[in-house]
Amino acid sequence: MPAPPTVDGARQLAFAAELPVGQDLPLWRVQVQMVSEPHADGERLRLRAHLQTNFASALRPALQQDAGHATRPAIGSDGRTALSLAQRAGGVVQRVAARALDVPALRTLAEPLLQLDLNSWVEVQASTASLADGSHQLLPQQDKLAALGIRPKRAADQPVAESWAGEAPDGFAQVSVLQIDKRHLPERLRQQMGERPFSLAAAIVNTAQQK
Image 1 (tube, one colour):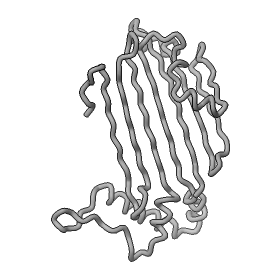
Image 2 (tube, rainbow, N blue to C red; image 1 turned 120 degrees about the vertical axis):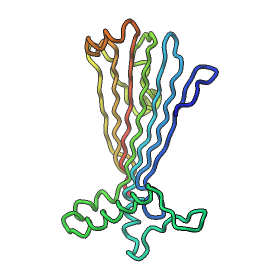
Image 3 (cartoon, rainbow, N blue to C red; image 1 turned 30 degrees about the vertical axis):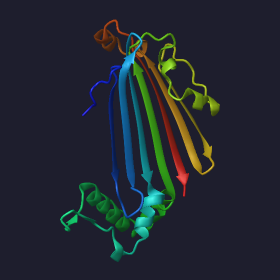
């Protein structure tokens, strides 16, 4: 449930989830944070999400464990074995992956993937305030983008979607940005929104780290 508004009118919502496999890092983890707050003559929504997939750091070590040393179940307060739904799901993923790797053709395809950890960061900002630069003013992490030599264009008659990619010290990285203003929306949707302005900007960073 969203938190009640603070003194300044802001509302926050945050949650995290993960899929354990083996005894080390989770195979999959997601973290989401959302903040809604007053913004000039309107309101601003900020959404941040981080999705982490540890093929190399979690799944590969789990698959290398002996079949007789499978993931240890958790022990409940009553002394009995207690497996959470996430632990059960992680165990299923581990067993399915192990069986798939018994097929030579599938192992050949999967081996490169098992050398990688994947990360995705998403940040979205939307506002109903009157902004001089529209969606361009909402672009997240502009200072960090500039430090990388990334200078997104300003949205004109059409929404702007741009992407940059290149090698990183330990793998590969891709940066994408999206800018949408009210004038880019379908006419019917603009009519439903009435006179209130609308702007949205998003930045997405994907990395693949070799382990």
